[in-house]
Image (cartoon, rainbow, N blue to C red; front, side):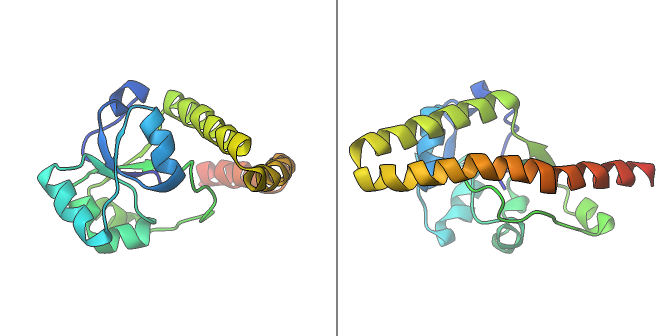
Length: 170
């Protein structure tokens, strides 16, 4: 998941100046989009979010996020985690239980997704230019990724589209 936000982020402009706990590549990319990136230990995240020291956080996923109670202080839960895609393909939740959480499930806007993609590619290229080991791994990974996206669109997306159409019929 893309993270818990105290206020909605309807577009790229809304990320400017936002204080978000997000490490690694996700943090580097968010920083390029104007986010004030913070790195906090697990025990520090909830109090910082509750007091407004940070405006948003990214952690692991729904199960672990729920255990840390982020939904209690940040009501906007965004997807996808474009920096860590495909950690889970499906999630099933009892509707009554979900509704009782009073959480707004949101998706990042297209301009946020486009900017994140561009900045990620820029960072990967910078690292490729600086580190020949990175470049070797990245070149092979990128080639595989392009092939995998094609396969995914055939194998997974087709079924997901079919399943969604069947769901709508119910």
